[in-house]
Image (cartoon, rainbow, N blue to C red; front, side):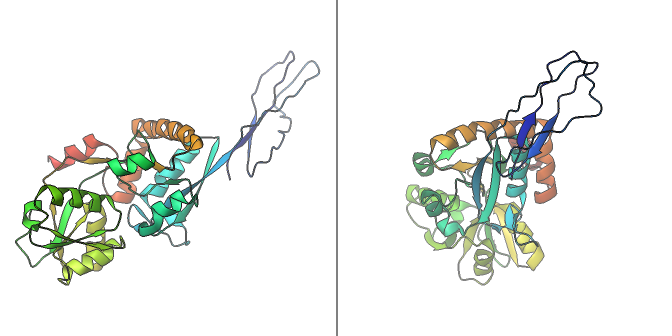
Length: 298
């Protein structure tokens, strides 16, 4: 639950002045008690004001570590959630709750009003922009990669995928990308769709059930390292680092929330806090385009 702020305004001649605020939750207002440090020479009058706290429900996949996953306490965790909690702290008038949702149904749930927004590395696409609201401030920058079995040496670029089978998560940004690229390049790639579980996709690649998959190297490298998979990666040669934004249901309330979140994210970027969160969860700074480009050029 989040912050309710009650302020005592002292209108009198005072020896020292102190503004006292109290944080409460669950929509309740709790008056502040008097302070021993405040001395007044006349009768004090008190007025209380409250900040309405609105709860917003955040959905995340919960199966895309280290961006999002289920922690040991059974609750959503990861970079996406850590950023959302840091944003939450900067906006007194909102409170976020979190729930894990399978990627294959995450957008259907948003449209059915089971939650208000998605914080789950959802890339901005023209199709999504027609239906949903996107933030203006990116909270991470992604580098795309092609994952293939380590025993192969015939896949190093998108052109090499022609005549091969590539798996992507249904409804994912990688699916949108490869569909568009395929259409512009002769439709020579056989695209098959999974449920978005990157571990399954990498296992399919390792075992030869498919030739390749498109991945975030951050997530895929973590899984490959932890599970000892025989999979390697080639950075895609088609694009620069791509921004990732918060995605909202298209409602008037979310229009207002989006403005507040964008401002909070800008503060986190400028203060360096977002970069710190990225290093903690992702192992390096993916919080700005400059940080990613600097590392890639080295």
